[in-house]
Image (cartoon, rainbow, N blue to C red):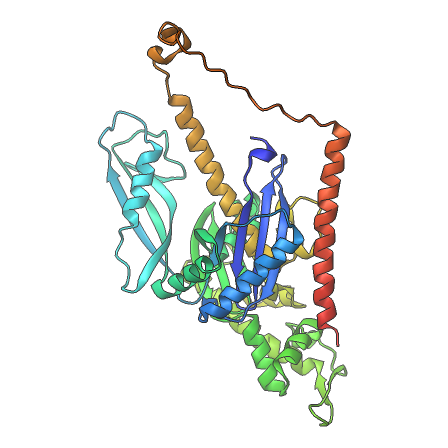
Length: 465
């Protein structure tokens, strides 16, 4: 499958503080080449849930418009959408299937039937199943089988992690996307999308926890022995820290956000005691002197609360420092706070690092796209490619099994079609020299990069006083 055969996948991250749309396609090396990128401030979303559909639609359309500005040749119709919010829950369940034909090996269709049966699990009224994830399979008395296809047995079963969400919250997301002129290809839990963007196969094997610190929520996903063991949504994020600063120091929300980003620290003891930030007074009022150490104290208190939730969830599923050799990977916009790694290691007792989506990106794009705040969006594209490659594989296997009857072969139809002659002319391909191909490539990337740089320059100019 060549690069030009692979589709363009679009990820749409509907967050509390921002909405991002990124379009990408895998190249011949399996890396994502970003073909379009746009973002917009999010106004209709709180704690990961769409509350104001009209404002959310405007923000989605603005992000799509910016994406179109970065690449006028791009057409966006279908999107993979991330979902989060404290309404997300996970349920552990088990399912079994007695095979009708025990003589043959287990087929993919039987595993699909097993998963479909798990979708009929009873869930609380008002909730809706988002995804059903098999953890480990068992065939007869053989336990902990990762891939049962091809195994022989009478009974096959699996342990499942069923992810559910509030029906109204899911409906609001779907409405916002549809009324923006888009089709939702699939809803993907944001911590799983972020995990696929920042986690490697080594991390998966070693055991790791992914903490995506967003604007309204912090999403946790725990992996052990290559299996998703637990997910949780912590109802606190960067917006809560900003509001704490606003109320604690008596400043405007925009000032609180600016101080958090420029001077904030997650460890109060690392902040300088004699450093101050001057905040201009309102309408002739005197300016305020804000202690950097007081600012760090507020940030540390809220971040410690988030990390205490992480420790609680890890204990709930029996994952302590001895189990998770890969430690904790911090990602999302909130992971960029200074000294957050030290605070995380101190509270959880696990090694910590910042997770960036660099590993999956082709090395020819601006650094803005490699920030941890775009991990979810990059992960949504990877999820789309995972679906596409699985379907492509199934299609290829099905295509191989098709046999052409002898009556329809050229030899069998030679006598019956003598009276008609059909001539099909293939279109003449346009041949380009290698120099022309390279010239077109460079022109495309230069135009795309320049458009992106112009967009960010305009946004930075607006932020300047």
